[in-house]
Image (cartoon, rainbow, N blue to C red; front, side, top):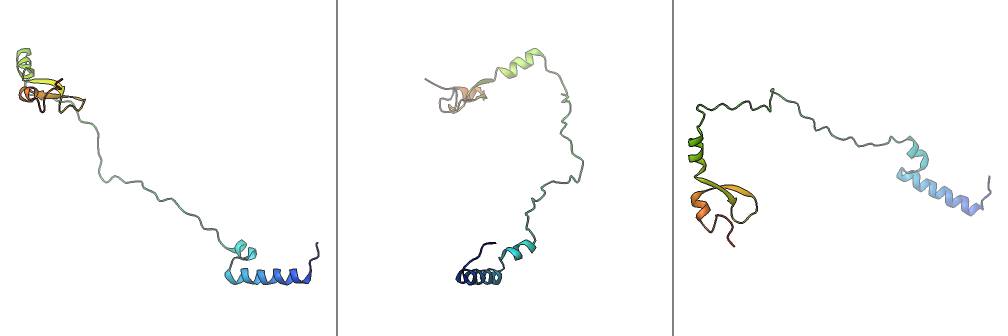
Length: 104
């Protein structure tokens, strides 16, 4: 063991007293319980049974080819408001230069 001067020993004792007074001396810290944070659980419990199944869509009446052609003649596919994506436009919207297809 290394021998220290008396002044060094008194400084060390003063420092140990100061640490003990504040509760942070190594002996006190060894006895202290370590705090640990817990992560909360965000799991949800379902109260009622749910389903993501939509099912088969059944129409009352199947359209004939002529009826389908008559319906689709009313609409066109184009860009609305020059936004890039294609959307279904009515004949009125397609002819309108403000909202209809992109004009160059």
